[in-house]
Length: 244
Image (tube, rainbow, N blue to C red):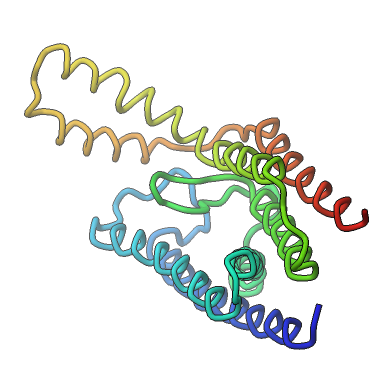
């Protein structure tokens, strides 16, 4: 890796760390208002709709900011991708570092957290996003350190499949509850009875009720671990290609 690239990594990392602090302060204020006990589940459904919508926009804006920095730092598509996942990973890790410093939270790496709200609630123990972030840092380092080496189609398939499984492990718990309570049973009743005017209020009411009752009882570790292993396998195969 050239000196210029190392300097870029340093400054992208500094940006991500500072951005993580800003993110943490926003969460600090929200928790003081809606989660004073630092217990996130069940979700607080008394939050005004306007704030919830703004939270969705803020989350999307966060991704846009990280992407914009990656575009500035990288020259080619793969370099920009590497800088993006690197910035995202540093931001994510230091988000928890700052939360620990400011709120003394999480209590442990097995504490549950709400990761994202788009398009539905992502939730997992804190350990999981940290492991994913460390994997992303490793992948970004290899891409940037060996710019002439290309990933194969098999590597890309492994990463895509692994990423899909990791995502599924984050949303599966909430999705099962959502579909079971809010959509599959009562939504189907409305369709059968042809009371189409009741669909929108039903979705709103049931979504709120489901969110209010959501307390994660388990995490699908097999799916998460399989996803992580597939991504790590892709990274290993890329590394072997470098060695050859």
